[in-house]
Image 1 (tube, helix red, strand yellow):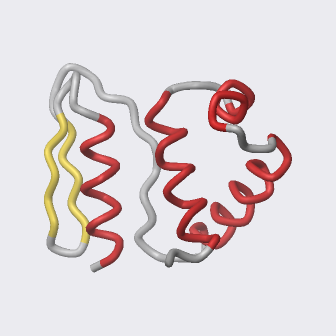
Image 2 (image 1 turned 120 degrees about the horizontal axis):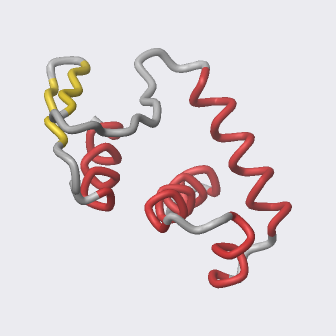
Length: 94
């Protein structure tokens, strides 16, 4: 059974990949806005203390190559954000 932190980490990943506002996502998924903000703040605060964290980037015409701890990921314009989220979640657990 996942912990609340694991559950909310997954929910935040789904929200990020949805492209929706917090308000719209919470309304569609039956989550409280303030609870969502609490968990987002709590988890981002704990993530910022970890070395090697990922940041959001915007892709230009040339592919972006990400390298971290021996793992290389090449992203081209139009990549599948959901797939990338899933791959990063798996890598994070390793």
